[in-house]
Image (tube, rainbow, N blue to C red; front, side, top):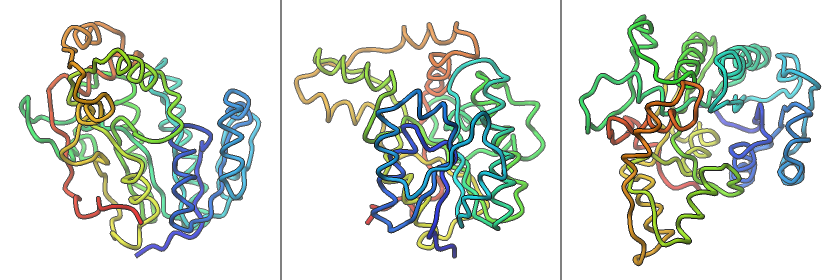
Length: 299
């Protein structure tokens, strides 16, 4: 059992970070954010919220390094830094090399390490037939990495990051969220979804969703669910984006087919967010988890 008292959020000035900071107060967890100065400069409105929520912020000028993570001195370190699009080198830097820095910093204090991966890894690694219920897949962690056809650099580099984390000396978890549902949603996909809902339409899609209540419980409630040294599809069991949009949009909205849009995604380069969306949805999987017992309401 691991009691989280002080949690370090590496790359915390972002959508996921600010929501985790908000939920930390509900669990009575002290938080420290380690971030680049540039992240605060790019999102000043978000930084203002983070500054009010975080117990402390450690800024680095150029790159986050292990010593800044070690300086934060937490019993839990969460690597949040991620890139959903861009060249492979950029994504490798965020998902693998910086994750190694975070792990090294966590190791200095014997901290529990949590890596935020992506459901795209499960989508690509699974050999299940189309329309299957898919739980945690592991060929990329069992010597079968080269046989996986990675559809995006995002899924490939996240999988490489997962491999690194699996070798961590102390306790660890890898969480694979889908589309994160929380406050302060400034991402373009959420802006588009809100826009189309005002037109009384919504996309008819099985995209997996990850409410912040689930993610925060898995991170801050370690002593309650007792999970360690495994990877988890951190998506809401039995729920999809379609369910959320029906609730947001109301009974008068009309669903629209996304087949054409997804077809366009298949033609995009592996650097594209649209291809990332296609890679997750292309097999019409229902994403589920072996660890449903841990997915209960947060306090």
